[in-house]
Image (spheres, rainbow, N blue to C red):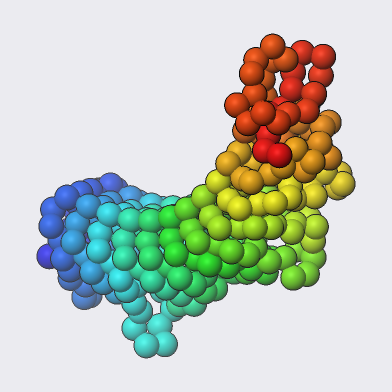
Length: 285
């Protein structure tokens, strides 16, 4: 058990690390105010539940690391909103969370939120509480669908990680503008198609769609997406006819097919099309 009241007595302590100490519970500081802590690392313990109310006096805390515990619940006192005005990084990956709501967490400075490697089967509630969020990691969960509408207020979001889920659909039901988005990772899912026409992301540079069931490459080249550097479609059942529609971005290395070989090399599938005088794309029939 961790008694936060003890930290309140150490007035000059800014970093508290209790990594791998078999902590199962956090004892609230009661009347004590833990005002000095900037970084609190409780990773690799045995927490099953955390009441965020016990942290409410930590107004200077910038980093909270709860990774690699056994958390199934992030709780609050009824009707209470916990305000952590300085919190920038919240690490909750590698736990047992099936769902999470941030309706009672006021952390407007939050920039980094990691929820990867949990058991999430639904999207986090009230992400709009974090208007300065830059990175959202939801990889390696159990999500079957993703609706971009939950991101519409996150104008600072730069990186969205959705790899290693069970996504069968990615929905952009209306025009959504994400002016800062640069990286979109959808690798290792069950996507048969991805429609991104209504997603306005002028700074999008990397899209990872590898290891899905795509039969077509998303039509992201009709837009003025000048910074687009890489669209990884390796390990999708894409035919030569599909690839041939995108000769130019393949030639410039923007679309990454599974094989680009020299003309003298043998194509293992027996099917290919010529890309340039010296290169060709080996593909499925």
